[in-house]
Image (tube, rainbow, N blue to C red; front, top):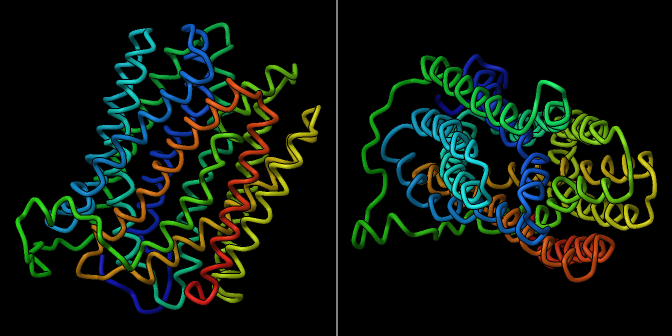
Length: 393
């Protein structure tokens, strides 16, 4: 997929890349409300829920250097397809109803997630027109986020349906990933075949280069993405348990509203970030998150929670599109696989740490304290953005 200086974003390869990402993220979204409910049914506490979710992050982070190296030395599309296949197969472990097997499945799933994202981001970086990087990043991340519109709600419906249950959800999750791998195979036909020769001089042992994550160009956008997503588990995973405690019914609509907000906002806000600048966009994203997380602490009904979720996803939309555009702009073309793998570490790392932190806080102080802590984390991200204002510009 050759780099395009200008022109249309929606080439066949880009459209199929987005579809493959949609299916991979759909699997992730259908499991987002499933794991907390499944683990608690198996007897796990909120802390154990956080531990299970963090297993996904640990392996995803550890695998990134190797996967990024593989992208640079082998094939971007091949890494993406392999990641999707690994995502599908790993969920079969969940069919054994034990907390320990759920941890193992999530750990294996993290490896597949690394392949899906490192390969996908490398393909995006090589194809996005220079003048439309914010818009391309907005569409790409919007497609990823759009999976959260229906699939969490579908998961809740399948869990409680007479013919459903957790095993049905796991089978659907496997199917989504396998279909995504098939779409990736079709996409590969539109991506020019390239032989990946060493593009840069290796000055030390091969293993040191392989494990090195020193891609300074993308460290700042990675830090911004980490700060944006630290609070994410509070309003995607633990919100299900909170709503159950409040007695809120028909909670699947929460995921539909927040997902629709994410989908519609990212392309538009991606274009906005091209016009108003990355620093202003990130500042707005953190402020929206702080407002949303503060509001949910006084929410007592479905409507108030819906408003909180929509505001939060607006913040994630503008912040996520902006950090991705920054990473694409700064990635060294000779080390694009490693650079985008470094950037993509931020999501699972922040989600894993955030999940473990949120679960621990619920155990000690309850859900309100958890949401306030999440708001404080967003405020810390805002301070980081303001401190790096000139570098973000």
